[in-house]
Image (cartoon, rainbow over all chains, first blue to last red; front, side, top):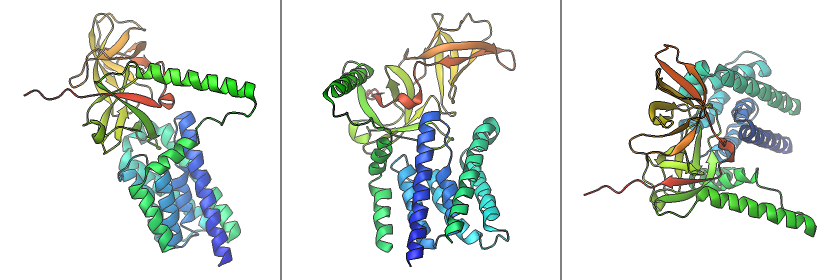
Length: 147
Length: 217
């Protein structure tokens, strides 16, 4: 029970850091790297359903920029929950499955909202994806350490 | 656990403005230092800041609705800002939005007390504009670096010419920026240029919404 609580607290700290990094870097540079999305996907490999729901709600609360539901926030919330189920199907080690899940998640996000951006501003997509993969693997390794 | 989810759900769907305040707190100025000399300097800086806000607003006008910027779209796909004036303040949608008397975007969605503004930095933004003293027609295409496109090839425009609004539904002649470096378009039928702006999106904290004209009977 205590171990589970510490793990959840650790997840919340990693998510908070991800939100802080995204907002700070975005405001300063104008390039928004989706660290919380990557963190949520990585955390879906370690948390239970209800714990993940709480972290997803916190992320949506902190990132939502308008008082209505948007496709971006639906994907941000839904894909990590889908990944919770998906990772049981992935045969690889956790870190590799995390990378694959993050790659698929980012691809779905971009194809759903800004497919043109992948072609027109490929560097933005690649920076976002690279940042997400790095943060995701960091979250994965830290959570695995605690497991 | 269930109670926590209900509370979080309440904040996510019914009280999102707490998050905007939280986000803004990341970038709020540091509190004044205790030392009097330092505090004096801090207050003078605050006064200068308030004066700049006052100049950004200009003289109070019944045709302008001042609005604070609450939050900014946090991903790469759009360049939208949420401002603190909505249906309850007389915003109906489609209004032109000004920053320091310069056109910076248009209202695309209206809520009760807030509105969503698509800025000229958004790649979907387009506006008919005119360039320079010759009033040459052109099209402003939004993006991280907005471009003035479809300028007729034989027109006499030079870098530094003023670019101003000339679109239906938007007040005529609102300044947007200066023409940047001029080059030929890919098909060589037109010329195009970047847009020099005296500000960037990060510094916009207060805007004015130009009220739509009341429909005539």
